[in-house]
Image 1 (cartoon, rainbow, N blue to C red):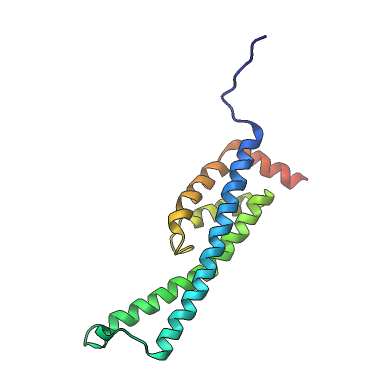
Image 2 (spheres, rainbow, N blue to C red; image 1 turned 180 degrees about the horizontal axis):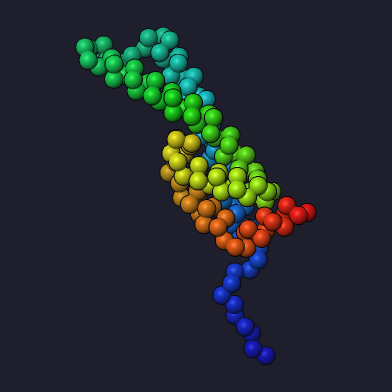
Length: 148
């Protein structure tokens, strides 16, 4: 008896890789959303109390300080809007539903604005998920889930 070794991965490995990536994405998107909530509250609190560093009180520094504060609040608001999209995409990956939306979620995970504090983790996870989702066996898996 000779065993035939196959170069193709076992059928469950693609789904396992997708599940691992989706769970990691779900965790870090939730962390990014919570961080952004806390950061917006902190920044508005700082601005409302007029707590600015002493150096900012010097001429020419105030505009930069306020510009940075409002710019960071804007990034946090983008994260507050887009992190739930990533969370929904990760849940759909776990359920193997909405293939196109899952690919969109993987692409959004690679953008630093969607998970501002966690982009060092979500960038490689997004790439990994996109590679896994582009495999032909994954497209079949999603098609089977739709037909059920």
